[in-house]
Image (tube, rainbow, N blue to C red):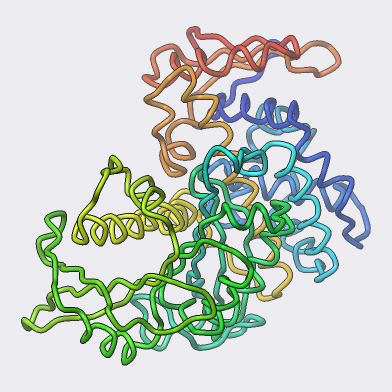
Length: 453
């Protein structure tokens, strides 16, 4: 084999590495983050980059750096690395990270986000921004910092940490993520998550009035609902107190079946709970396996047109109470395809819960690297969708597992600069990937094409 040619089992990922360097994403990290650790063979930030590449390559644990990244010289060079650090030294670097390091990383991600995100450039005059907020359990070993007993879906008496996430749902972008101890739930974190979101998206009073915040019952305390209303947000939130939900549901005089599910009915609360600002309140009841009803109450202040828009339904000129109620319920249901889907994508596609560190700041750094990876996948998918609708429908799992593992041959010049990537022409995803990515990569004079490997 010619010394200027290298084979890579992840040739398509190499193209993503080149594109990432074009976008100068890691440059922001280099400028903001300082890790106090002696450099022996690899700089601390280089080892952090190796961990990031491992996430994009589908590595679940840091140990997979040694099998996925270290043997692949092509992927190292595509991301600007000349060699790969051993997983043990990467782990040591994460271990010396502090809360100051985490804050610096957040600043770097803000620079990257504002430079490349669609949500930051959202036109509030044209339509409302939609933010979904949720918490998700991060099970971990009992020796870790911040690891406590708490609520972990499907795991009784489990220990771990909690992850708070704010999604810009219209664009499938993670705006803010924060790691908490295992006991913290949304009622303790909602306001701090949204305050960080306001800074990230520059949400002033006028923009907040054009921003919808959807939250499940964990954020349905009176204090949180009133805080959201006082901040001027458009809200869709479930009442947290089940006893109040039952009491409010008793004032419903007419229930309307939901043809979408067949086991759910909605009805307007005629004696609503008073909040600091006017709201509409919709009771939702679902049939349980024993035949009894489970009651919830949805609190919102959205106008009719926005309800139908979020529910992806045509606006009716004079909607009935049943049609309005169903539109509100369906608009809230869309939350499941936003933040909940994104959390599944991060866990399945990016191995979010598979990498656990004893140090709390080290775990936060891993979370932030996964956040950057998720948004890079989203921005890449936008480019892919413009040329290949099929690839534009891929989620994180399909992108990391399938799309980024197209074998390729890389050609370098005598100075080690990547000139050409040739992807295996027999791979079913190679042709649409080349069609979508060749033009952006050509801006730096790099060729992406198909051929026999």
